[in-house]
Image (cartoon, rainbow, N blue to C red):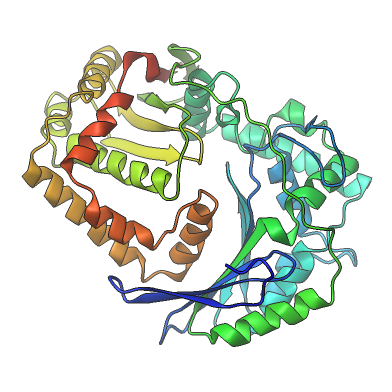
Length: 434
């Protein structure tokens, strides 16, 4: 990519017959256009590499690190829709016949819209409201009350409470320990000055990417964005300095439990994935490999899953997921059970046995093919493509490369993942009926 900007790069992915056009503008903004011929709907996302994991950094124009309250990235996302003239950006999109939304997760904050008409007007509005913050003491105080109610609501929802409890047990200081929205206590510390410090640091175009997916003309889209950006002034481009307290694979607390008004006990068992230096696409490959292991060993067609069903140890199946940022992550396995002690014992023993994977070439090939098929199917969804491209870009990965990478991995790559299934890395959180 040309550091001076203004040079469109075309990258073709022959295996999946896709092409991505990208350009880095002079202000640092990266634009990626993914043409989908014949698609009636378009999808646009505009994201910053700034999520709940970043709480300690050097503000733009300053020299010293500051630590900001938990949940401030999520709070900032909520306040961005408030425009200076008193209107709400979401309503402006609706009047154009466009669906708009936003979300904050661990790594990113993303603003997006989709529709079938008014693409140029939508892009202009998206750029304008995200690039013109409006914070007042009054609207911040009002938002604190709204988010406090939201956080309290999550604590009353067993599924959310299960995740929060598991993360709290797993991590000692790494921000994955906390909910993306922060805590009731932390959001009360947020003020206008801190919001502007975060905004001026992380919402600079050089820390942002815009993705446009649909039946569009790439050069025309880039011209629309360039014209919009040429009318605005931005702070000089600087390297953002962030500070993270990374951890090894030892969990903070092995076990804890609470009681709630539920019928069946809920059990979450986690495997903590340690900090490791990742090169291009490393976290994507690791995520794919771990997902294949979970599909083979815990999926509905596995012998172990059938054993849990036959012995009536789970009441609604088993769910599992893998999360990796560009530093560390976790594996999470959740289930409802009427025989908690026996289920916990069996599941823990089984997960720890995966340190020595007994997977055949046939099993590996079958499940690799299934995940590859699922990925290929997802490429028909504009919103999935746009969100996945942003997510993996911010993890130093190329989403479309995952198809080719998946084809190249072999069973020996899979068996190397066994090193993560250790007793030190395992923790539990249980919610029992009152």
